[in-house]
Amino acid sequence: MSTHTPSTERPRTDCSAAIRRFAAAVVLDERIPATVPGFDAPFFQAGLAGYSDAAMRLVARRHGCPYCVTEALLDRTLLSGGKGRTREDPDILREECGLGDPASNRLAGLEDHPVAGQVMGTDPDEMGRAAALLVELGHDVVDVNLACPVKKIRRRKRGGHFLTAPDEAIAVLRAVRTAVPSDVPCTVKLRRAWDDTTDMADAFERIFDGAYQAGFAWATVHGRTVQQKYVGPSHWPFLEYLTNKYDDRVVFGSGDIFEVADIFRMMNETGVHAVSVARGCIGNPWIFRQARMLLAGEEPLAPTVAEQREALLDHFRLCVALHGEAGGARMMRKFGIRFSVHHANGEAVRKEFIAVKCASDWQAVLDRWYLSGPSEAPAEQLPADHP
Image 1: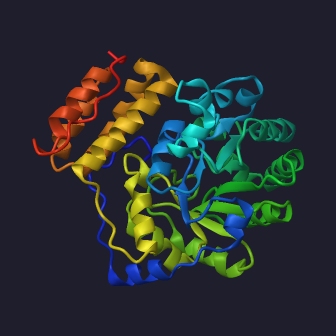
Image 2: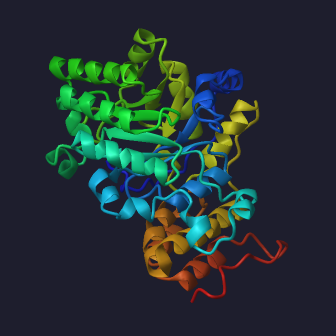
């Protein structure tokens, strides 16, 4: 399964009494906000290829997400002035898309900080220069991707490939840490190994240890191997092994987080200090609100129809501002599929979202499925200047 495979099941919001008790007693490790001011809760939105652009990140933040990671940006593309200078700039929506001045946008919840710019590449020198550029673009943290399992990435000796080549991986990590100003944190995303062989387990440990020795603040470790991609369960006992063996280090966990209880179940079972929410937050920004409710000892609530409508409107507006109407409508089709699972008539809503081609199509779906009744206030509409 990849991040492009839609889920057809509604995320559960009910949690066991044990999970509720655990969540209410969680105390955030003080090293996390000390490293990244504003990172005030033990969960965050992962970088997701094809999904986690500024629009998705801003919607997540409005629902309680404290920290986000961009999708992986290729070092050479960044250095040549491509994608990383446009779609993934954390300030582009407020500065270039006509959404107001920075001060007003901060008040309106359009502040895309703190944010980690994730970089992926092959050559240590290019990776270092690209990492430095991410800092110039306004990212608060530089995250190095040594985990991506996509075949073309591995073939070009990027991402997860490095888990077969620990010397090369450590050279990249050192180059990035040297190139990035000392007051800007560096972090790394890893999978637990290339495969399940002993040699690859040893390679992982060398890279994991080398990252901290190089001065990286933490590693986010996905519980699957590179060869697994997204097939089979994430091996959470490996995360427990890491936190027990390296109990002086900050370690984040990733893999199989689909509903709010999974965040705290992973923390409870593995000892990780924070949890990366990936596929589980696509079309489900409420997972972050629900997690904050559990931290406060409250019962997590599923989104109402009105809340679903508001999030869809927000996401569509931001997506169109970022990508234009044609690109935004295409982008939002796959998000609509995921949002639809929260609706009582999810399958019918999903089919209509798939057919959306423009803003007026979106408005028609919202008006058909996301109005609860005549007693509600007049429905918010998409901007009139969108056809």
